[in-house]
Length: 363
Ligand SMILES: Cc1cc2nc3c(=O)[nH]c(=O)nc-3n(C[C@H](O)[C@H](O)[C@H](O)COP(=O)(O)O)c2cc1C
Image (cartoon, rainbow, N blue to C red):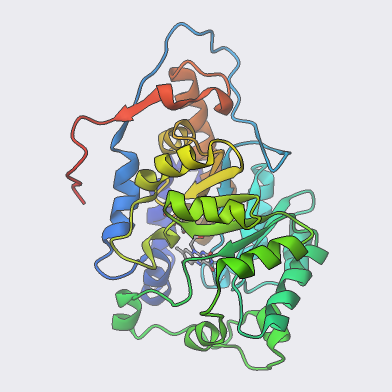
């Protein structure tokens, strides 16, 4: 029961228990040996906090600004495909849950709900749109325009897919999307009538995307453009050079290139290279408020959570989503106070250091 959740792992247990094996493994799984999937979580734990004491922490707030607008916490909801497979409330429930927690929800291109419906389900909520690029540029444009027309305030271009990663759990399960599950905006944009399979969808995507495409997108787009799915300082600098308003340090939750860097390990060099010139976000393995605090101390402006929000949705619809986000917010608030900070902005590099042994992960 939601009321009994003490941490995100409780939501994970309950959410996963509600799902059949195929969908459960689709949501939980990663690529290859799932080393990056596990290391994403473990790598946050290889930082230690350097708390400052006696700082007067009567009034601690997790409130922050993302893209110049307020959010109750520096924890956003990451784009996750096919949410109707987790709960009947689908992306509408996710959006409503995020709005109730006072934060931003990023909708996947592979949404089972159209952007206008998502926006209507969460009036006053903040929404961003994750964009996959399609071979037919008219399809890409139609998807983006539909979201912007529905009031979505940023476009997040995913750079680490296609191609799709080697998801061995799905292959072993012979996993296919349920017949009734559709991606209505994509179907409308491609002019088809039948729902597309995952393989058909990836085949339609643009595998030739380059920085030049990011630049033309950013120059034409009426809202800020982020690049999501990079892990190096080199690529972060290129993203800014090509017009991005910010980047999301991400390895797609370990679902794409197994043995790519854990995001906690990639973040410091990217923060240093950007030097505060753009919005810096990170996702992957965030399960605790302490992980959020570590990411902020390492230079992120905010984090995103993928699976935690999804477990909340699977377990309890919009209320489950809000509960998971609130757990993270409360843990962050406590961590801030115990570190001698009264706001997320007060966390700095002086609040973290590498744990004594950093080379061996027990994953
Ligand atoms: C089931 C699932 C589906 C996802 N679908 C998308 C997607 O459609 N587009 C995208 O950019 N990222 C997608 N992601 C990646 C997330 O946006 C995010 O990078 C990742 O989940 C963060 O890791 P975490 O789950 O450990 O928080 C997906 C992740 C999961 C788990």
